[in-house]
Image (cartoon, rainbow, N blue to C red; front, top):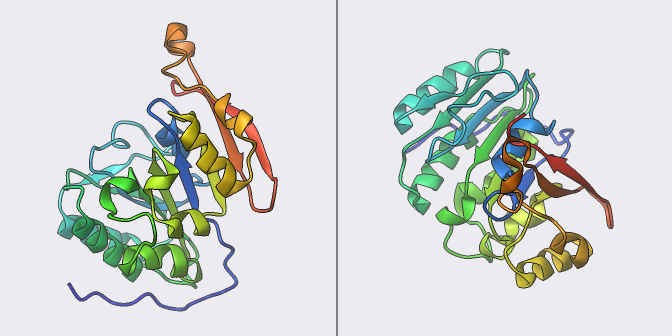
Length: 239
């Protein structure tokens, strides 16, 4: 599919890409909704095969489901012509590398470095779409390495850092780390992002706190730009 290229490259945009990693119950998807990287006024598109975002508002806005690539692109293209906030999610698509690349092609064409609104792009469970942890090729990789100049802000969730291309880890300026499933996973994250391994091993998920019922919460570490810059917090999925 031949789509337009993004326009008006603008290197004045700051790098803002974010990745969210952690085992089941670490509230990765909840973090997208509750942390302040996405605002009420933001324009947002999502690759959401399992409709994780459809039932819950995102910063006060309803997420509209699109059930085909054509429907998604048509609505996203016209929504980007305006300044108003929107949330569009492409749902119920097979988790294949080809589908990720087609989605990336569409998002890439929506980039505009002079648009008054940045376009936030969320990819749920990125590791399921990629074939190698070494590099993310194609336009999917270009979203991470070149999207900043065209006002694109990438968000990706996955369970283990070693399963996703290093392109994503290297280009993410903020990293959400939830509970991990093994010491090996903790060591990988510790070495890659300069976070003490004992701090990572001490994180607990909502699964660990199931006995708290609706009051359960997950621990997380948020890594910010710069060596040794991280802080710990709690996130409640029912809030």
